[in-house]
Image 1 (spheres, rainbow, N blue to C red):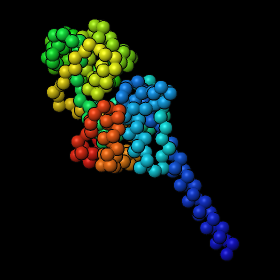
Image 2 (cartoon, rainbow, N blue to C red; image 1 turned 180 degrees about the vertical axis):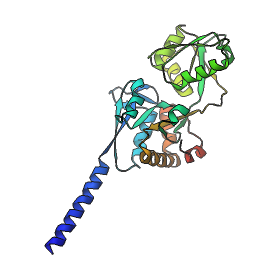
Image 3 (cartoon, rainbow, N blue to C red; image 1 turned 135 degrees about the horizontal axis):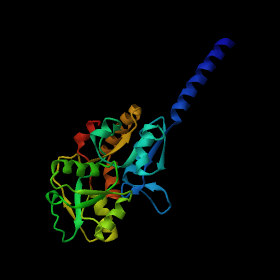
Image 4 (cartoon, rainbow, N blue to C red; image 1 turned 45 degrees about the horizontal axis):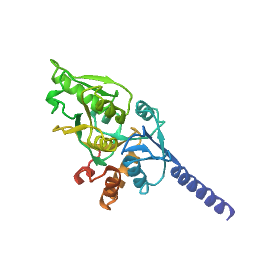
Length: 265
Protein backbone atom coordinates (compact mmCIF):
# COMPACT_ATOMS: atom_id res chain seq x y z
CA UNK A 1 0.00 0.00 0.00
CA UNK A 2 2.83 2.36 0.90
CA UNK A 3 4.50 1.60 -2.44
CA UNK A 4 1.26 2.40 -4.27
CA UNK A 5 0.88 5.68 -2.44
CA UNK A 6 4.53 6.53 -3.07
CA UNK A 7 4.07 5.78 -6.76
CA UNK A 8 1.00 8.02 -6.96
CA UNK A 9 2.89 10.77 -5.16
CA UNK A 10 5.73 10.56 -7.69
CA UNK A 11 3.32 10.66 -10.61
CA UNK A 12 1.44 13.62 -9.12
CA UNK A 13 4.69 15.43 -8.49
CA UNK A 14 5.82 14.85 -12.07
CA UNK A 15 2.45 16.03 -13.38
CA UNK A 16 2.62 19.22 -11.34
CA UNK A 17 6.20 19.76 -12.45
CA UNK A 18 5.17 19.61 -16.11
CA UNK A 19 2.28 22.01 -15.52
CA UNK A 20 4.49 24.51 -13.69
CA UNK A 21 7.18 24.25 -16.36
CA UNK A 22 4.62 24.93 -19.09
CA UNK A 23 3.07 27.82 -17.17
CA UNK A 24 6.50 29.34 -16.64
CA UNK A 25 7.51 29.26 -20.31
CA UNK A 26 8.94 32.72 -20.76
CA UNK A 27 8.17 34.64 -23.92
CA UNK A 28 9.80 37.99 -24.61
CA UNK A 29 8.20 40.46 -27.04
CA UNK A 30 10.72 42.80 -28.68
CA UNK A 31 9.72 46.29 -29.80
CA UNK A 32 11.51 49.55 -30.59
CA UNK A 33 8.85 51.43 -28.64
CA UNK A 34 9.19 54.53 -30.80
CA UNK A 35 6.38 54.20 -33.32
CA UNK A 36 3.24 55.77 -31.93
CA UNK A 37 0.41 54.72 -31.86
CA UNK A 38 1.53 51.09 -32.26
CA UNK A 39 4.33 50.87 -29.71
CA UNK A 40 5.57 53.68 -27.49
CA UNK A 41 6.25 54.64 -23.90
CA UNK A 42 3.58 56.46 -21.90
CA UNK A 43 4.28 59.22 -19.37
CA UNK A 44 5.25 56.60 -16.79
CA UNK A 45 7.78 55.07 -19.15
CA UNK A 46 5.64 51.97 -19.68
CA UNK A 47 5.31 50.38 -23.10
CA UNK A 48 1.85 50.72 -24.60
CA UNK A 49 0.18 51.22 -27.97
CA UNK A 50 -2.05 49.17 -30.25
CA UNK A 51 0.37 46.29 -30.89
CA UNK A 52 1.25 46.02 -27.20
CA UNK A 53 -2.35 46.08 -26.02
CA UNK A 54 -3.49 43.53 -28.61
CA UNK A 55 -0.84 41.12 -27.34
CA UNK A 56 -1.86 41.75 -23.73
CA UNK A 57 -5.53 41.19 -24.56
CA UNK A 58 -4.75 38.04 -26.55
CA UNK A 59 -2.58 36.66 -23.74
CA UNK A 60 -5.71 36.27 -21.60
CA UNK A 61 -6.75 33.47 -23.97
CA UNK A 62 -3.29 31.88 -24.19
CA UNK A 63 -2.18 29.41 -21.54
CA UNK A 64 1.29 28.24 -20.55
CA UNK A 65 3.20 31.38 -21.51
CA UNK A 66 4.58 34.17 -19.35
CA UNK A 67 4.76 37.16 -21.70
CA UNK A 68 6.99 40.18 -21.09
CA UNK A 69 8.03 43.14 -23.25
CA UNK A 70 11.50 44.43 -24.05
CA UNK A 71 12.30 47.79 -25.63
CA UNK A 72 15.26 47.47 -27.97
CA UNK A 73 16.79 49.05 -31.09
CA UNK A 74 15.01 48.33 -34.37
CA UNK A 75 18.03 46.60 -35.91
CA UNK A 76 18.34 44.21 -32.95
CA UNK A 77 14.77 42.90 -33.06
CA UNK A 78 15.29 40.26 -35.74
CA UNK A 79 18.80 39.43 -34.54
CA UNK A 80 17.16 38.68 -31.19
CA UNK A 81 14.54 36.46 -32.84
CA UNK A 82 17.29 34.54 -34.62
CA UNK A 83 19.20 33.93 -31.38
CA UNK A 84 16.09 33.17 -29.26
CA UNK A 85 16.66 36.21 -27.05
CA UNK A 86 13.19 37.26 -28.20
CA UNK A 87 10.37 35.01 -29.34
CA UNK A 88 7.97 37.68 -30.61
CA UNK A 89 8.30 41.01 -32.45
CA UNK A 90 5.72 43.80 -32.30
CA UNK A 91 6.61 47.01 -34.10
CA UNK A 92 3.96 47.96 -36.66
CA UNK A 93 5.31 45.18 -38.85
CA UNK A 94 4.20 44.66 -42.43
CA UNK A 95 4.43 41.54 -44.58
CA UNK A 96 7.45 40.78 -46.73
CA UNK A 97 8.38 37.52 -48.41
CA UNK A 98 11.90 37.72 -47.00
CA UNK A 99 10.60 37.79 -43.43
CA UNK A 100 7.95 35.16 -44.13
CA UNK A 101 10.65 32.77 -45.33
CA UNK A 102 12.42 33.10 -41.99
CA UNK A 103 9.76 33.83 -39.36
CA UNK A 104 6.13 33.07 -38.55
CA UNK A 105 3.46 35.71 -39.15
CA UNK A 106 0.29 36.17 -37.16
CA UNK A 107 -3.03 36.83 -38.81
CA UNK A 108 -3.33 40.58 -39.49
CA UNK A 109 -4.27 42.70 -36.49
CA UNK A 110 -4.91 45.96 -38.38
CA UNK A 111 -5.29 47.31 -41.90
CA UNK A 112 -2.68 50.01 -42.41
CA UNK A 113 -1.89 50.96 -46.03
CA UNK A 114 1.19 52.86 -47.16
CA UNK A 115 0.94 56.55 -48.02
CA UNK A 116 3.19 59.11 -49.70
CA UNK A 117 3.94 62.18 -47.55
CA UNK A 118 5.21 65.51 -48.93
CA UNK A 119 5.30 69.16 -47.94
CA UNK A 120 2.21 71.11 -48.87
CA UNK A 121 2.67 72.66 -52.29
CA UNK A 122 5.16 70.00 -53.40
CA UNK A 123 5.21 69.06 -57.06
CA UNK A 124 5.21 65.40 -56.00
CA UNK A 125 1.62 64.21 -56.32
CA UNK A 126 2.09 60.48 -56.95
CA UNK A 127 4.74 57.75 -57.17
CA UNK A 128 5.34 58.83 -60.75
CA UNK A 129 7.03 61.96 -59.40
CA UNK A 130 9.63 60.50 -57.01
CA UNK A 131 12.28 59.87 -59.66
CA UNK A 132 15.37 61.97 -58.95
CA UNK A 133 13.99 62.88 -55.50
CA UNK A 134 15.30 61.97 -52.07
CA UNK A 135 13.66 60.16 -49.17
CA UNK A 136 14.89 58.95 -45.78
CA UNK A 137 14.56 55.47 -44.27
CA UNK A 138 16.14 52.86 -42.04
CA UNK A 139 17.82 49.70 -43.29
CA UNK A 140 15.82 46.49 -43.47
CA UNK A 141 12.38 48.11 -43.54
CA UNK A 142 9.52 47.25 -45.87
CA UNK A 143 9.29 50.89 -46.97
CA UNK A 144 12.96 50.98 -48.00
CA UNK A 145 12.35 47.81 -49.99
CA UNK A 146 9.30 49.47 -51.55
CA UNK A 147 11.50 52.29 -52.88
CA UNK A 148 14.22 49.84 -53.97
CA UNK A 149 11.63 47.87 -55.94
CA UNK A 150 10.38 51.10 -57.52
CA UNK A 151 13.95 52.03 -58.46
CA UNK A 152 14.52 48.66 -60.12
CA UNK A 153 11.60 49.46 -62.43
CA UNK A 154 12.76 53.06 -63.00
CA UNK A 155 16.53 52.65 -63.22
CA UNK A 156 16.82 55.51 -65.70
CA UNK A 157 15.72 58.00 -63.01
CA UNK A 158 15.85 56.37 -59.57
CA UNK A 159 14.99 57.90 -56.22
CA UNK A 160 17.67 58.26 -53.55
CA UNK A 161 17.36 56.81 -50.05
CA UNK A 162 19.33 58.52 -47.28
CA UNK A 163 19.61 55.89 -44.55
CA UNK A 164 19.35 56.92 -40.92
CA UNK A 165 18.26 55.46 -37.58
CA UNK A 166 15.85 58.31 -36.81
CA UNK A 167 12.32 57.37 -35.78
CA UNK A 168 9.36 58.31 -37.94
CA UNK A 169 8.49 61.38 -35.85
CA UNK A 170 11.95 62.85 -36.45
CA UNK A 171 11.72 62.00 -40.13
CA UNK A 172 8.40 63.81 -40.50
CA UNK A 173 9.83 66.83 -38.69
CA UNK A 174 12.82 66.79 -41.06
CA UNK A 175 10.51 66.46 -44.06
CA UNK A 176 8.52 69.44 -42.79
CA UNK A 177 11.83 71.37 -42.59
CA UNK A 178 12.62 70.48 -46.20
CA UNK A 179 15.61 68.22 -45.51
CA UNK A 180 14.39 65.68 -48.07
CA UNK A 181 11.56 65.45 -50.61
CA UNK A 182 9.12 62.75 -49.55
CA UNK A 183 8.45 59.90 -47.15
CA UNK A 184 6.64 56.61 -47.65
CA UNK A 185 5.20 55.19 -44.47
CA UNK A 186 2.00 53.75 -43.03
CA UNK A 187 -1.13 55.85 -42.95
CA UNK A 188 -2.03 55.52 -39.27
CA UNK A 189 1.37 56.52 -37.87
CA UNK A 190 1.76 59.41 -40.30
CA UNK A 191 -1.66 60.93 -39.68
CA UNK A 192 -1.28 60.56 -35.91
CA UNK A 193 2.08 62.37 -35.83
CA UNK A 194 1.08 65.10 -38.30
CA UNK A 195 -1.93 65.92 -36.14
CA UNK A 196 0.03 65.87 -32.87
CA UNK A 197 2.91 67.98 -34.21
CA UNK A 198 0.76 70.24 -36.38
CA UNK A 199 2.97 69.64 -39.42
CA UNK A 200 2.43 71.30 -42.78
CA UNK A 201 2.44 68.06 -44.75
CA UNK A 202 0.19 66.41 -47.32
CA UNK A 203 -0.72 62.71 -47.19
CA UNK A 204 -1.33 61.00 -50.54
CA UNK A 205 -3.02 57.60 -50.74
CA UNK A 206 -1.08 55.01 -52.76
CA UNK A 207 -2.83 52.59 -55.07
CA UNK A 208 -0.53 49.59 -54.82
CA UNK A 209 -0.92 45.84 -54.67
CA UNK A 210 1.26 45.67 -51.56
CA UNK A 211 -0.17 43.96 -48.49
CA UNK A 212 -1.61 46.80 -46.36
CA UNK A 213 -1.87 44.93 -43.07
CA UNK A 214 -0.07 45.04 -39.74
CA UNK A 215 1.18 41.84 -38.05
CA UNK A 216 2.91 40.32 -35.07
CA UNK A 217 5.93 38.14 -35.92
CA UNK A 218 7.11 35.00 -34.12
CA UNK A 219 10.43 33.17 -34.17
CA UNK A 220 10.54 30.10 -36.40
CA UNK A 221 10.23 27.66 -33.49
CA UNK A 222 7.22 29.38 -31.90
CA UNK A 223 4.58 27.60 -34.00
CA UNK A 224 2.31 26.70 -31.08
CA UNK A 225 2.37 30.26 -29.76
CA UNK A 226 1.58 31.59 -33.24
CA UNK A 227 -1.38 29.21 -33.51
CA UNK A 228 -2.70 30.13 -30.06
CA UNK A 229 -2.27 33.84 -30.74
CA UNK A 230 -4.15 33.64 -34.04
CA UNK A 231 -7.08 31.93 -32.32
CA UNK A 232 -7.04 34.60 -29.61
CA UNK A 233 -7.06 37.43 -32.17
CA UNK A 234 -10.13 35.94 -33.81
CA UNK A 235 -11.85 35.93 -30.42
CA UNK A 236 -10.87 39.57 -29.88
CA UNK A 237 -12.30 40.40 -33.29
CA UNK A 238 -15.58 38.61 -32.62
CA UNK A 239 -16.13 40.00 -29.11
CA UNK A 240 -15.43 43.62 -30.11
CA UNK A 241 -12.17 44.04 -28.19
CA UNK A 242 -10.10 44.56 -31.33
CA UNK A 243 -12.48 47.30 -32.48
CA UNK A 244 -12.27 49.04 -29.09
CA UNK A 245 -8.47 48.95 -29.15
CA UNK A 246 -8.45 50.27 -32.73
CA UNK A 247 -10.70 53.19 -31.80
CA UNK A 248 -8.67 53.98 -28.66
CA UNK A 249 -5.15 53.74 -30.04
CA UNK A 250 -5.51 54.17 -33.81
CA UNK A 251 -8.26 56.78 -33.75
CA UNK A 252 -10.70 54.87 -35.92
CA UNK A 253 -11.77 51.47 -37.21
CA UNK A 254 -8.75 49.91 -38.93
CA UNK A 255 -9.65 46.25 -38.55
CA UNK A 256 -8.47 43.69 -41.10
CA UNK A 257 -10.96 41.85 -43.26
CA UNK A 258 -12.69 39.08 -41.30
CA UNK A 259 -11.69 36.56 -43.97
CA UNK A 260 -8.00 37.36 -43.36
CA UNK A 261 -8.28 36.02 -39.82
CA UNK A 262 -8.78 32.54 -41.23
CA UNK A 263 -5.38 32.53 -42.94
CA UNK A 264 -2.01 32.34 -41.16
CA UNK A 265 0.99 33.85 -42.87
